[in-house]
Image 1 (cartoon, rainbow, N blue to C red):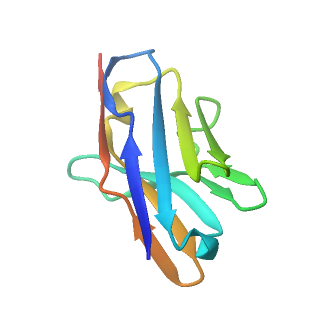
Image 2: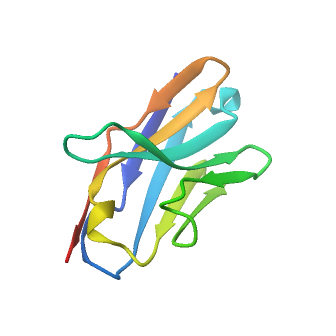
Length: 115
């Protein structure tokens, strides 16, 4: 089992920045991909960014140029730096960890961007 704990959400004005953190614990040796997803009210959960064990990253088009995903292996933590936030970025952001056919989710952290 892998446990994921997110932090760093909150309320920010449009154009502002937030950094989300996701601390992983448990059987983390089984994990080879970690990422961030988000779900806005009335919408499906969508991928924001992922980072693989080798460091390769992928971003949703909406996140490219504004968000950066990174990881600190010593702390078993993944970060999502979000800059130039827009009201449409408002959502619950979920940390995700995947290894083989198993996926784990954090409890989510609310990000609200006011206009």
